[in-house]
Image (cartoon, rainbow, N blue to C red; front, side):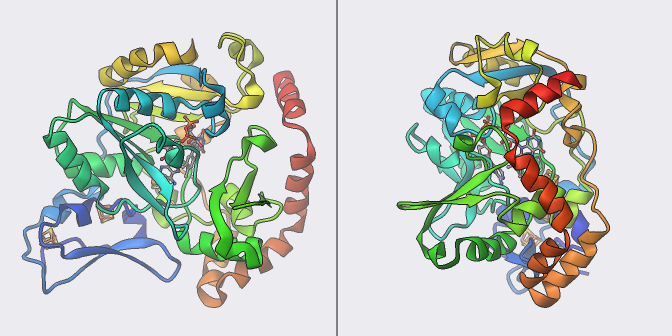
Length: 394
Ligand SMILES: Cc1cc2nc3c(=O)[nH]c(=O)nc-3n(C[C@H](O)[C@H](O)[C@H](O)COP(=O)(O)OP(=O)(O)OC[C@H]3O[C@@H](n4cnc5c(N)ncnc54)[C@H](O)[C@@H]3O)c2cc1C
Ligand code: SF4
Ligand code: SF4
Ligand code: SF4
């Protein structure tokens, strides 16, 4: 049997790309399966059976983490323009800017010219805008891990922000602790495939698909919540669970890759030096401790998981407002911190339908879920401010 990476069960591969980055022979490419999820494919002709790809796979090792019990905070960036374009409290941007100030480089997910999602390297503050905001689809890591290794070898600071499995993959690829590497993992419930998103964009944008230049899953001009917009040069198309079958099923947790339903990372033992998430359900009393921050504009939960994370949080102190909190309060509205997403019975039907009939299956199921759909649309109509007041009463 060949001594290279083999995926026996789709649930055992998160698509992080560490194996592909580790192959010095260029024998591994990440390729889409029928549903569009990416998996490594080995070119046996090029493979010399060195076993490095197996060594760098997080799924072949027991899950390591940052190791410390997290210190938990609520936080928000002071720069209002940056806050508006960030998904929660803009803390990613504050950390990224601090790394750039030290001559470092920042890696994060950005839309490419053909509206796919990939991790790119940014070396100036203007380009940070490309990374800002949550994109609810899997980001291709490409050769980002190799780039990180080179930059670190050249003595540069590097910040890498991604899903917990991507951070675990990066660490497994590097194989040792790097003092100048700041890792930020996100609270994560799962990712669908780029193929599914592309199908959906064509459905929602129609003949404007070719003109799309940005996708905002979290458009704060529509309040801090899960409402988005598709942007063309001169217009904006509403993108919510009420207009998009993909967004609807994403929020229901039904269209993720199999590894997400078996995720090893929703634990206190985090992968990043710092973990960022939305501080959903933040109490007004806590928000009031953030220098008058408005909860309607978004607040982050910040978990500091290592001494390095603590040091970087100190660096950004002048740029943010910070208030101590605790894991229990954050977990109340963030199950993703303790357990993986659970597929509902429709998950299999939906996926099989997609494999057989393509995107039509999403639309068919979406119509059948009219009741859920109506409830979500009705909820969408309640102003965020009112929802938060109701939450205070719970
Ligand atoms: C797929 C996904 C699921 C999430 N699920 C939850 C959740 O269930 N609960 C919760 O509290 N928070 C969740 N988050 C995190 C949350 O939405 C914010 O990203 C986080 O709070 C940081 O916000 P910010 O305002 O500091 O920075 P922002 O500017 O909003 O974003 C920060 C970073 O996210 C990175 N990023 C965006 N999309 C992706 C992607 N697809 N893959 C990898 N990195 C990406 C960007 O590169 C950037 O570095 C999720 C994020 C993603 C991407
Ligand atoms: S065993 Fe070595 S050469 Fe073969 S695919 Fe893996 S890393 Fe590449
Ligand atoms: S290293 Fe990542 S992409 Fe490669 S097999 Fe393992 S989990 Fe999958
Ligand atoms: S749920 Fe787990 S496996 Fe899926 S993208 Fe998030 S961290 Fe990776």
